[in-house]
Length: 84
Image (tube, rainbow, N blue to C red):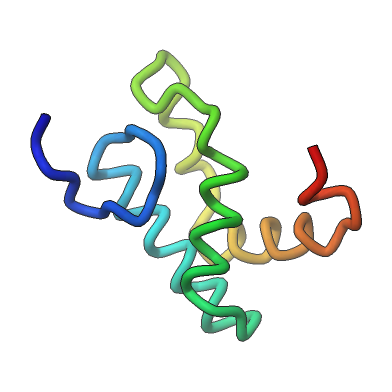
């Protein structure tokens, strides 16, 4: 397997997705003053289970990275977000 362009994400996804997730993580850092590592953990948790090569993989692009950053930041404020 070729080396991933953006290895910080723990799931297999096309580089197009990884670039988009990097934009989301960067927006989380800029808009909500969290660390980049924390933003990556939130993204891994939110999208790690998804089939990034499946029929509906394009759906993540229906929002701008800033919108996802705000949404994901809001989700992680829920006390149950990090529990299994």
